[in-house]
Amino acid sequence: MEVRAPQGSVLAATLFRIHVHLLPKLL
Image (tube, rainbow, N blue to C red):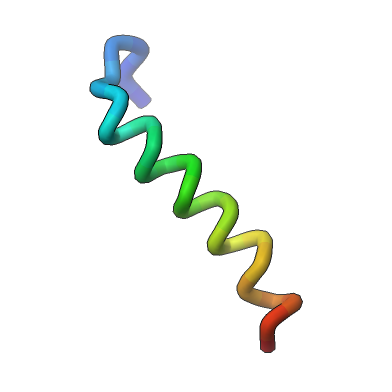
């Protein structure tokens, strides 16, 4: 993971993590 990642990439990664954590609960 690059240290100088654009905020868009950071936001996408954060949303991805949230989605991964919430997915099992929704299923």
